[in-house]
Length: 554
Image 1 (cartoon, rainbow, N blue to C red):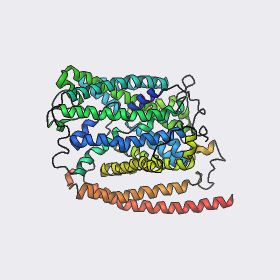
Image 2: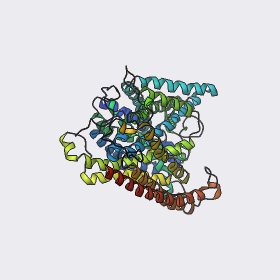
Image 3: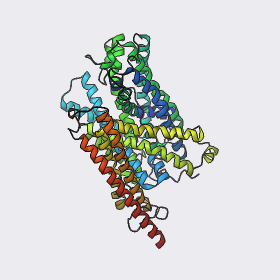
Image 4: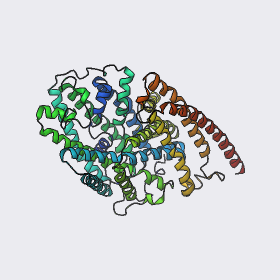
């Protein structure tokens, strides 16, 4: 099996570091959770009982399958770039670019959120002027940019220290909460007047978000001396993350007064009537613990930002190495062997976006991530045909257990849950997401025509169609993309009409994000989807004709 011919290892001058399994675990912990912050918003939306049910079930049907998918791909193709490399190897340059684009752009969009949250938390402890807030944000970005420029090993060390502090803090919340158990934590199961669908809908998207990020560690595989430690780290990090979510939430709901679940929020526990994990400590150990936990909240956001700066900065780097991005993004520092241009570019974008309103940006980012989780399992299925399981086992590589039945489980659940999350998020998220993902094919065409793609380094292995100047099969792939997006929009609007208008009984005043145009958006999805699918079929037919003539000429 020719593993080393794939990816950028040894091509762009990356330096390899001796990262141990424990280091991978703690970096993953930061990438995925860095504590249970965010779950507070699930509790009043889904209900305390449903929140605990979702937190317990999702590690089994979402986090565990994704961890295994990433571990298997990372074992057979341990290369810088992760999902981009795996999808490219499975389905070619076009689809590989889409995966790389979705994962990288999502990081660029939301990395500023963590910086903004740090400023919010610090402002609760120390009143600051607007200028001081901006200075704090820039200072945080500068500190972790320097750490990242020093190399993956330094990122690992910082992640380890911060993760230990976060785990200890939430372990204390869990212990104090469980010791002071005085309320039924699953009562009520759902908010009053909510149906099962309402309750699940209120929590599923946050739960999906809380268990995302396992694939990000693979972006740095080319900088790890023994990349086989990554699959091991994945399977250890998953239960650690789950326990950090479930036990403190259980302890908090069980120890706080009945009815307080309605007041849980991300900035709860630091004064006022709002409730959060810090409330468990302040109510039982004293007010000072609220400030201590506030420091942990700051540390958590710093930990996430630190690791996502490392992971996200490798995205455009690997695309540039394959001539699918501006070439300057592939530059590597001679001394440290890190992609410094990628790190600096992500830091600069974060400085800009950290000053912005993130509502629309997050709407877009969520869809990018869910699209990634749909294509990853499909790529795993294809790679099993390309690299037989028996051969992998002979080489001692990790393979997901369970045979074909196991593959159905590990691949099936993420796809189904991702599709449900896309639809249940609402019409605005769905519509904005389809528009956002459409940027992928457009940017691919531009970059492919300008920079040449993989044909640039391997003309024989990646020939171009003389008419389109694209890789052979790209026209058909673009047609397939149009058909998929068109049918997804067309079929999705049936669900959305029922979920948001008929079932949800929405009125004109409920269309708060898009005014009163949601019914019009649904009409666009209906007719636009049909037109897009029809155009896609035409493009496929044209592509087949072009490819056939080109092959005959050769």
